[in-house]
Image 1 (tube, rainbow, N blue to C red):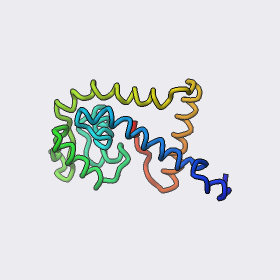
Image 2 (tube, rainbow, N blue to C red):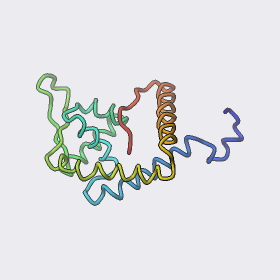
Image 3 (cartoon, one colour):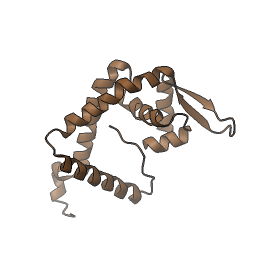
Length: 159
């Protein structure tokens, strides 16, 4: 649809609606993770590292879908919180690998149910078929937009 007057109403904009939904997801998740000392920004990195510990900073940045300077700031925060350590690669001193601490590993069992709960709250009232269509549609929207700006599709998402 290319009618600019239609998009004058923000509730007709998929971008606006997904932004509002993303912000609501982030707040709902942070309500559940903050008591454990984890911000929504830190959550994204922990979730990727729970799946594959020891990634390089660059690869972690790509998988989370953030620019490298933002990743460096987030990793400093994660280090201060005692959730990760960074180690220079033995093979290539330019690369820095990120590893979870035992404390962060222990949080996985506590925090993964939180994301399941947030998703259950968000999807209440939708049928399984509607959820499948929503996942497929949002995945395609993401592919379309990342291709449009020439970026890689992140392999992780917010919640």
